[in-house]
Length: 147
Image (cartoon, rainbow, N blue to C red; front, side, top):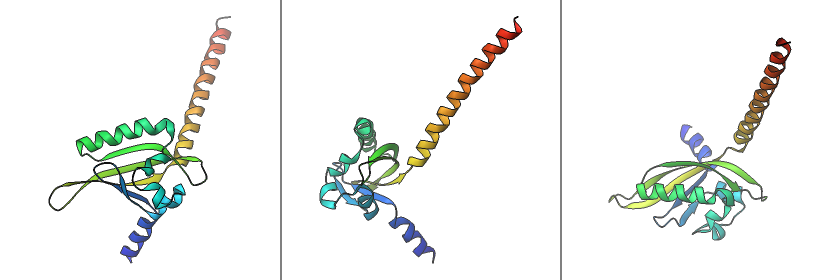
């Protein structure tokens, strides 16, 4: 029963794997469904075309540094969804090795975190409004008490 549960969860995740040259050799059905891409469009170097243009340099830099260091990595960026909307994802990856110890590339998983990012933004805006209100309130309190 536990194995069936684990498989069901894994099938819904956006898994991917890339070769040492950063060309993609696997994308899970969930990744393809989320992006609306076909395997032919996304495999090879096509998978990076869905990264938001404003995040692309940061994303690529993080991937290249991880590849050079052969270290696990994590990054948040916006990925284009099937409807053209960009959604925030958390991407975690780790290097993979063959039985002989040869570096085979990376395997990773994306999780959509757009709701969390929107909530964080709303919270930051609320805190900024509260900060401004406190400043204004303090100004008026000080002004009134100096009379």
